[in-house]
Amino acid sequence: MPHDFLEFGDMECVKRYADYTTVTCRQWLPVLEDDHNKDIVIQSMRYLSENKIAIIYAFVIMETHFHLIWQLLGGRELKKVQQVFLKYTAQMILRNLTNADSPLLADMLVNKLDRKYQVWMRKSLSIPLWSPSVLKQKLNYIHSNPVKAGLCKYPEEYKYSSARFYL
Image (cartoon, rainbow, N blue to C red):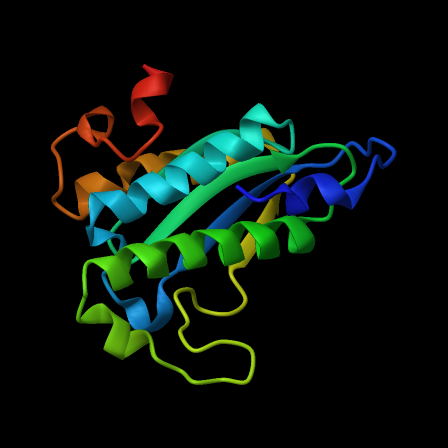
């Protein structure tokens, strides 16, 4: 991950709720079907955790989207961290797709002033998890996603999920 996260400065620690975030691939394209692209998201989450930028409580990475329960540390703003996180993962995924000469690149072409391709849909959904019951509901939803999609029989069997850590 780039060091942009560290440039937010030493801010006063603010107690805040964890957030449930959903990030969707542009036009629901199966960008995350490739395990290398899933690994990019995992490595980026690991960076956030190891550098004490965020606590990652739960996640699942599907072919067209991913869900995340995370809590930012050090008074960081969700919008700023999310922006850098998504920009970095998009750049790495685009590099991977370019190297693989993926046909998905044509579907991601947007030719905007600030970018040629777009990996993620704009305005990812983020909901503060203000109560234990809402947190539990979102946690169960995240972990049951691959089962509902027919990718596994039990949540803990799916490799790109935090479900096995909750056993």
